[in-house]
Image 1 (cartoon, rainbow, N blue to C red):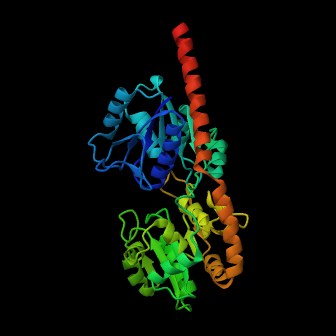
Image 2 (cartoon, helix red, strand yellow):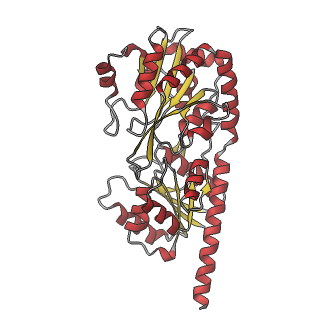
Image 3 (cartoon, rainbow, N blue to C red):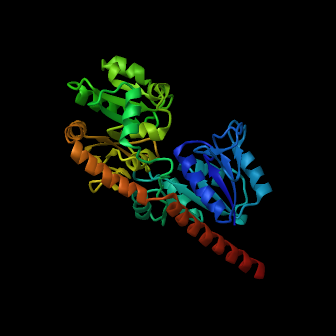
Length: 394
């Protein structure tokens, strides 16, 4: 089966990881894979965690007409199926704006569901393609409620990349950052973008940390982002103690270079988001033996619920968001501060919770995700070939 993956292949976004982890496994299973990366610049061989990808990745970055480039590649590669892994606006552009004769190719998409309801035009697109997968059970149920049957493609964790380090190594890494032995380090590994409740996570931490000289928060993200905030400026404007906030560059400059190492130095990890399709950092941190904190909304509930991590309840206030009008929700800040205090004061309970979370995270593998995708692709390809055979016979 010839499969063209159109996603963030060759780059380290969440979509890029999903696309390449699945793409590599489909390649190993004998499928002919080619990929197009929206943000891959083509200057170096495409890699995932330092390993060269075994298939060609074409660069769409900077192309004056992206869809024309996609159509040209499709004409040359002639895939059986095009697998689009991105947000819905990308799927719409690809499947409705590329000028491709889709009667010759199967159309399959993998997408998150970042809150409900799902935009009606996106539902209509999902109903028109040959296969739909989503990355959370929340997404499966949301699609079902609006008349779309979707396959669950739950992201996995590569335990060779994300795993618990020995306590001695963790202590050594924390020492590089000058953390006191009794320091409590909260981390947030996410994008600095409006969908993430970055400044609310910071505000809650600041309240929690007022009486704790050795409390720190590591913001593992861009310090300034056009899609989010100027975080150093926010700290200054709000009058927060800047010495208690660390950024990714501080950790890297101190010698805590890999993301796995930065997860491992944490006492707890938080990603609160107004909407969240999945949140790979939540499960990656859990695989490293760190308690993750998420909102009790969207996929957060199924990832850290049932005692695997900390769920923060939402307020009654909601507002239609920028993702197709899906409802944005907000964390109960008092509950967030209280749970930070509990994590700080309860190291043994925190450790037990982290162990439960680590076991759960390690259960979900990229092989399992690839199994779900391959089954769907084979079904779509089989139906497509049967339809073509009927057409020829007629």
